[in-house]
Image: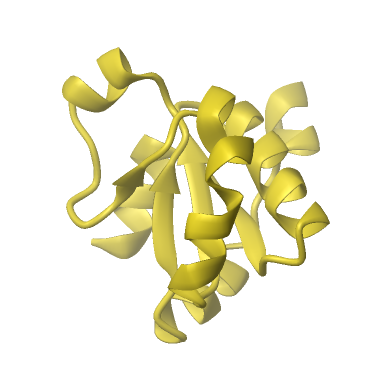
Length: 102
């Protein structure tokens, strides 16, 4: 297991549980990355703008799965959302998450 995967590992069972409960996927990658491809139905909020959108995210009133390219930014996003009492999980990188939800 690579060092990044160790520190930013995700639990596929938890992600599936979140999805079964109607979770919303938030893509925290840059606009350029989003434009290169994204998960259908995901909401795009770059990590740099996440804190400014906390109230809008709270209104969604659903669990959140944050994802990015590798899992590093989405780990930070999940921690930030949890700080604001939003139920959130790190969905990891887009490629792995796409495979999980396919």
